[in-house]
Length: 453
Image 1 (cartoon, rainbow, N blue to C red):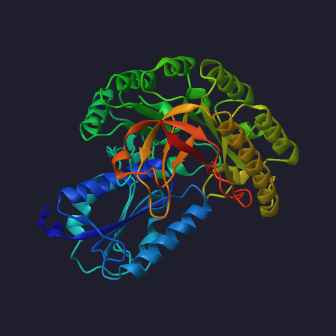
Image 2: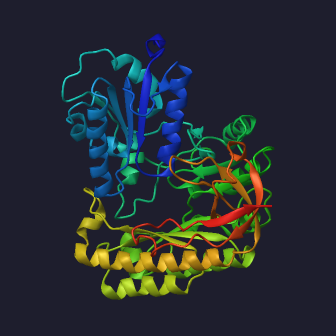
Image 3: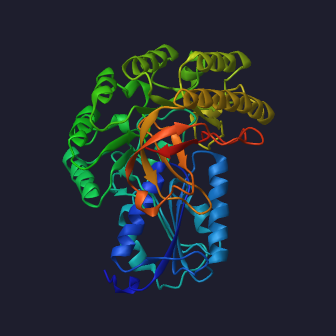
């Protein structure tokens, strides 16, 4: 494989979807950088464009197509590679998009550099060549531990899913559950520490299912990572309720580095809907897990995924979900309107919720989320906390997160590049006054102000 063709070239990257996708894109960028490829500056023409796609909803798929068209217009002479979940599920459709030069599925993206070296320079017609495997044949695991232009590292510990919930197309896009060894992940964490990293987010599709490939267990991975010197903080991106063990909760409560911060998908508070979804738990188990976390870590931040308007969600079922979430001491809701995905079993469920009703239900839950996040943040005003500061993005204040994921912003007069990636002691203050409440479509919490101690 001749990699000399990459020397002096520039690349532009665009990622849609989850933290796992962002982690993988960062790793792709690092691999190409090691071969002499520089990330293109804003407004600069790129030689390579890489789009890492998502297909969790129809809206996500549409955004993927829009992003590809936009990059092709902005970089008309670039070699355009499309990978990720949308590329896996609909490779032919992607290959017919004008300007796309190469489409790689979930099994093939692990060999991105090889495919790029082989295909670049060839005369590419439309449709572009695409390479994908059937779901049962997706077996590769592309390691990823990178931060890209961020402060925090994202460590991919698992890929794929065996659950096949009726509404979800991700198992078809990502394949079955698989993972690397604990030893290899510990080594990647050590490398991140050697590079100056202080916080690592564990990512994956269903990370609580870790161990299917190696016969190991997620709790053992957590204990091993906790011993890596130099890493001050770990966050677990998302854990299914049935895979969130009491042992893990208790370990995190007394851990050196695992933060009091959990993200747990509920999807529905109705047991009838959970059965229709083929989820692996009921609402009682979910409540027990929330209560256990709050008993062990009273100030823990708990984010919850909720899907609204799925097939079978009658008004009574939605009321059960809303009532349950109203009562639970959770901190934030991530609300997703149900989206029909071709080939999923949910299409056989007869009761259909209108788009108008989905919007109404989403608004109710987003309002509830806003109230819960505001109340959670208010509990911390006036307190001291440790914050890992992150460099400011264009046009925004320097910010960071406390151990329990309260977002804070540092006034511009106190901000300094030297504070980036530093854990500093602050006092939490009230957020700045706004002319009105935040957008209902914005599920991000309103940051507290802080002052250095």
